[in-house]
Image (cartoon, rainbow, N blue to C red; front, side, top):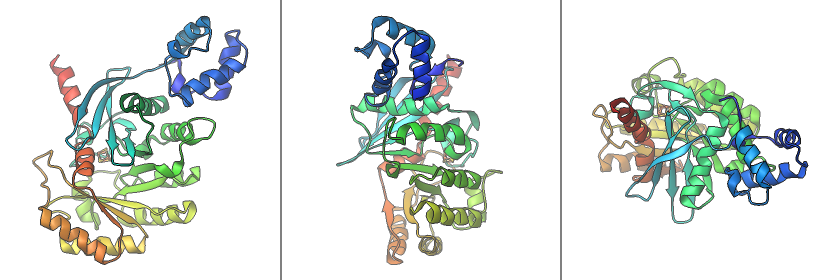
Amino acid sequence: MSLKALANCTYSEMESLVKELGQPVFRAKQIMEWVFQHYELNPDRMLNLPLKLREDLKSKLVCMSSEIKESSKGGDKTTKLLISLFDDEAVEMVIIPSRERITFCLSTQVGCPVGCRFCASGEGGLVRNLEAHEIIEQLYHGIAHSGKFPDNIVFMGIGEGLLNFDNLADALGKMTEADYIGMSPRRVTISSSGYVPGIYRLIELGKPFILAISLHAVDDETRAEIIPGKLRYPIAEILQACDDYEKEIGRMVTFEYTMLAGINDSAGAAEKLAAMARKHHAKVNLIPYNETSEEFKRPKEIDIFDFRDILEKAGVTVMLRLEKGSKVKAACGQLRAQHIKKLKND
Ligand code: SF4
């Protein structure tokens, strides 16, 4: 795609473009207000612009490169959108409403190179990185579909965002800088499987994003059973990076822990996790596995609650989302997997 994408234009790029099109500079501000304040990427609906300029914008820019291909609603009121991209690839975004808030979960890559064994997104490996505008467009699709601006954004969809750092950072800038969308970085969570060099690059951005680490195990041997391959860093290095994140950015880290029966759900594991969380000032998000493959089983409810109780008794802040968390995260990548299957059969 050689044309510039509207969702990722800077003010100076837009000013140059309107000058090139023979228009007064104030038009740039009008266009940018449509894009970043009204979340509108269709020039036909930018009604305060002259018709000629609207037509020119459509020929000079990629206005919207993706579209909602399918939506599926879960019993817990979450809505998953399958977003089809310009090259027929697809990603997913999820709209998660709760009583007072609405959260959007966004993807950063097509496929994922990390390949966690419980996750459908990692099954076929990485296809490609998402461009910054493709990340931003997911936010716009979510707003158009739900009619609401999110209270929180979590990067927990398809992909390891810190391995697509430049594009993620570019999109984060547009989402959180005051001149653009201006969402508070404190309401943006970046989830990572523990890609240590990426955590340090995130620290360099210097913004108070929430960092969520998908720990899933309390020792490297067990973790290797869940996350295979070269992209898995030793737990000690991840924890050091988490300490540095808290020191530099001033925010507590969250440990994401997908509970898998007989693998990481013992009382001993809970005690070790509690000690780790206390030492590194981390909150813990327990995600009981939602059975999507035959390889892993979801722990029994009693074991889930016992595990949670051990953490709580040790003074750790624990979030246990029996419904939404499990469905959204563990089933991540399934709509895309169906989409790929369908493309192959057509
Ligand atoms: S859980 Fe996240 S990091 Fe692991 S394979 Fe799935 S998308 Fe990638």
